[in-house]
Image (tube, rainbow, N blue to C red):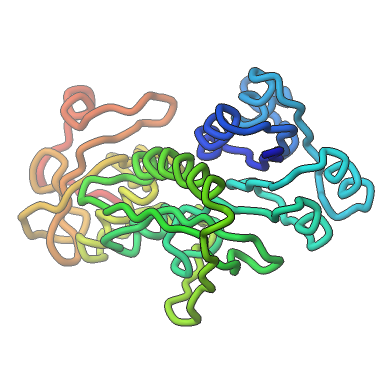
Length: 300
């Protein structure tokens, strides 16, 4: 099929590569280049960069609402458009262009976690599983009928980063399966019950409140790792917490019990990975060799 692919971040790259290997990807749409690096020069995002390396035409409109943008899309004569974390809203005029419709790769089991941050929210909420849905797109926010689902469990050590990579791979397989079965797959309307919205992560959420139960603190740390990263102050220094697990122990909220096991409002969390400002990620043993933290220290 003639495919127009629309995506921007790392999550979307495996799907682009899978489609390129099996179909005729006639164009890639991505968000415009953004300033990056020390010189703050505009650089293409991961999808645009990979498309250029594959020799696929790239378009980066700031909007698909103008008539000329819709006309340019139509000029590619796509059979289908595949959308994966594109970041721009497709108006109805653009949705109507592909002869066989627009499919979206969404990283949740819809209707749970419609919206911007489904991977992080699933971990933070303590969901036992998540997955990928391939959905026929409508004008609403992630409201379209689902062609197929690919569930995956969320383990006690899963972070947003690790789950992101797993779901990206699942999404690539799933969209190929959806296109292979496009003539026979039924589109299942999403149920009205169970709808939740995965709001964009607010920076104010990232500071750890040690008065919360340990299970919630652990989910926050793993759900925000590696970006933006849950954080706390250790000896006045802001430190990101990148991996954790539930632990035994009691104490005042924020009190270090041993190593970097920290008491919470109920129970305790053992921090396993951290990142200091301007440094790379490191395990806790490495961190403590350079910055010992005495038992009884209060984190804040």
